[in-house]
Length: 74
Image (tube, rainbow, N blue to C red):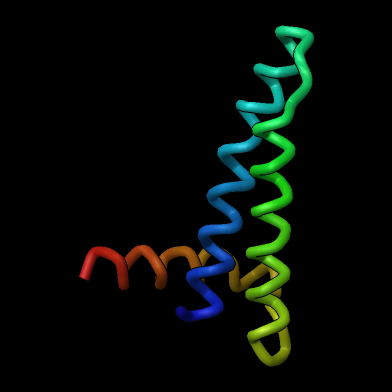
């Protein structure tokens, strides 16, 4: 798998963990599932950063997401 794909999947899992965190805190229950999602997100993003020489720049992120999505569609 391409490091860019790991990066984008990590971003998506991280974004999906936000509603789970909010839901858990609003219902006064421990955010176990959200915490696991955050850890998975961190591992995927770190894996991508360590595999790509030079890492990632914040300005590259939209292009990387667009590239991965276009590869997925094609």
